[in-house]
Image 1: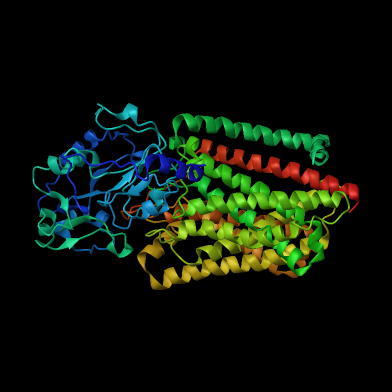
Image 2: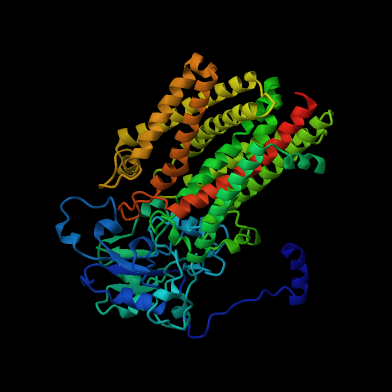
Length: 238
Length: 388
């Protein structure tokens, strides 16, 4: 039916496709990227996690098996399995912030049977919670464990609801969205804003003058599992 | 058509008792499913790390059973193996029941089943799940149309309509495709070492062509015991040969995988096998089950390779049961779970199905067997009437 109706709507619209234009104050980039500087991240600090989860109505399920999380910390070995050796004493206790990598070549987008997960032209990998059928194919496809599934109704597990961002229902997948809703309003991601130690930087990786681009040249930079060809856009200074 | 359907509504007390039992089990599954709809998938053993389990495992296993109908259809229609003429219909109807179960297992696995049609509304050719839907629905239709028409013409003692034959020819590569696509669903995912191997599709086909015909032999033996229709010893022995070869190839393929993993010692490849057969980091919930798989596979091969035990009906039935159960364990549970272990961070999270999850699965199997029973009842009654 959709195919049959298309020409008709085209005639009525005189070929012009409806477009959503970014607001005047919106931040834009050719490709958004994040740099995590492990030298600056403070052990035990939870600021970025709390800010993100509060802003995005991420529930605190309290069950490791069913937990929902957009950003969290893990060990060096957790972030870079197979890259460790037995004598990395100094690194062992350091926290590493992990989140969706907003891959340039995202396997989650490739496998989604409804295009509920999609990649925007600025590189952000987004989710449509209202289209997701909860098949969890994307969770199997993500090599970074970045995706969470709402095994149960998440709403009873929210202390307070931020009315500026939707809550989710049970049965859908969710993950970090690089704060697309904040970028549209001209403000940086919540985690970046919350970090008082400057361990998180965010910007346009394709802009040679951007802060993230400069940081890439300031030390040894890693990405998680680059050998898989997914092109992760979260960079780690070790 | 109606006069054929009528045959499903007359039957012995045993027939009705069997249907009643299946209905009760279906009801129990349905109640658990309503509970799952209310509570979400939290009533299952699934987790953030092992996000697919028994449901998707059973789906995978049953796609194989469905595809294996080709092991009867191909020899009969392409090589004129006459013995299979008597049982081709049973293979096709088994495929129908198996595909229905596949679809139901996908449905019960969905977090948002009410949005199932989004797969059709937003077709995504980049997703293997989209192709799986195309392949499975096409295969269901093919087998329904072919099976029903062949049976109807048999009843009327006329040759099947001419347009059925091209459909039969199409159904042969189509059967291969449904299981290949299902294998690609797994084999195309980065960083899932247990699945990410070119031999996954080959392994799936081999295990399918062993488990499906093994089930068909068991079903034929039941048909012979409970009805006046004899599928024929020749057909069963031919099927037994197919099961034997397929089971050998299946075990060989697993051996190839083991060699590559254990000799290269690349951790990602070793870990899943370690988890399945020895336990990893102190986690070994599937270990007893996997050794049961090994034991059953060995028993099956011994019974099948020995010509005398393969010819004896009781020993053949035991062999087929062993083939079916061993592959059910390895493919219906072990394969899916091992792909998720270790997780993206190198840790082990274990999975074990919960009781409601098992009951929902049993309910789906019951629906499948309800369909199978009704179709087999019709087929057997027709065959009894025409006096085969």
